[in-house]
Image 1 (tube, helix red, strand yellow):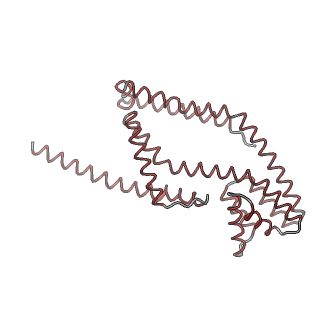
Image 2 (tube, rainbow, N blue to C red):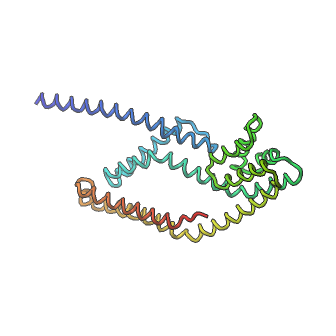
Image 3 (spheres, rainbow, N blue to C red):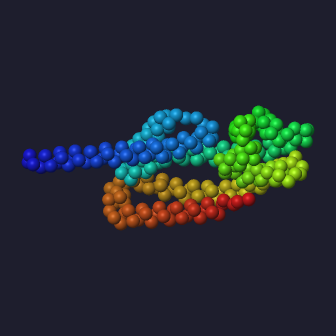
Length: 279
């Protein structure tokens, strides 16, 4: 009996030691790679958050999601909650970045019209961009304020605009940068070019708005297809946990869940390909 207890104690101690070592390693990887990347992306969106704050929120959210889903649907729910909690910071910064880019694109046509009017009144391109940084709303004013700051310390305006385009990954900014580079290189009426570009972007936004309205039902169908099996599975787990437990206690259960997840992912991907129309 003493030998069994000693063996169990040694095994438990070894398991605890290995869990501590690998857990600490994975935690450091998560902290250095994921959270640092999230922090950099938030700074690009002019959201200043402390790394310790991000780490604390991420860990608390992971703990809450793991416990909640574990109580709801068992061990599978714990895994789902763990994945959702750890990926929440990355998803948050991605949503914030897309929302900010959408607002920037929405503000850009009016800003280009103001820039063209300023140049017709006798102002230079640099002064016009400085006016945008001072008078336009956020986030457009923040991005152009960064361009103005770089220009003041001696950086070329074209290079600052190209860096802004790379930072935001925006097709509209690529058109603007190309128009400015060509106009300053070979000459021409830049004010008329900016006004034409403003009208083009405004029409493009109108077409995209109509497309989004017409494809709203398809996107909702994608959400329903994604969430309905999860909801039905959670209800079945809560009503008949013994019968549903075979999905994660038997090999064929894992196979069935893998097939279901693959089919759901394929269906959502096909719907997104149909409703996402590039203008």
